[in-house]
Image 1: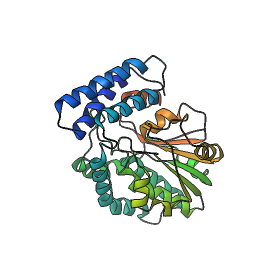
Image 2: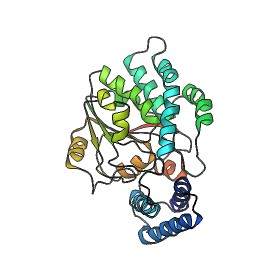
Image 3: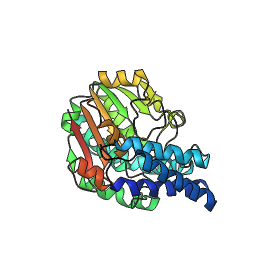
Image 4: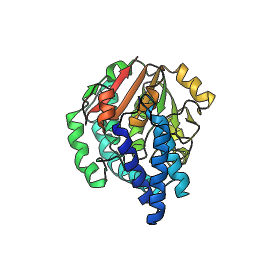
Length: 291
């Protein structure tokens, strides 16, 4: 996905948000914002991939703040909220005697609802009260784009590129179904902290390695995936996958720049630019397969 003009002020809003998370020093906040503006001026041109600009801006903000994980407390909070809702989500996925396909569809839906966990997106700051109140309503509504039957036939060798903390707890519902039907899973997390994204620290804390066949990283702290910095084993896994599952908007923005496939994008459309790029509406629950 290419940079949209609307991304500019959203990115600067997020830089301000993470600066406020990191410090109460107004001078440092101003310095961080000015640094972000400078990076935006240097990197933003029509047609540039969105991930190039967002990665550069956030890396500069972290550098100026001298903080390699300003979202740490929010990541912990997201995981705690998801742990509370997990038993309810699990019961919905397994309610009655669903077929494996229906369980997979329900698990994907729960995982997509988990993509609500995204603190700092302008106009979409989701906290515990919002998530608790909306989970059941959205689950009853179901997926707005539902390619899960086609995805279900491609689960032999899955590369699962994860997104945020919090939602990773609900992602395990999908991982369990894939393993149940005999599929192999390569889980891919960020190589270092970026926004609220999952890292190896979360893999160790929640023993996610026991849910999958192997765990890889993207190799760096890019927003989404930086293919220029990705380790060879990650690229090889993408090339050999029967299905790539890409969680969240940042992964969509970067993964859609390459021709790996088939790839399933699981996300909530939380911004107009991403929604329009996908040919969808805002606020959709999406499980879209692209071959």
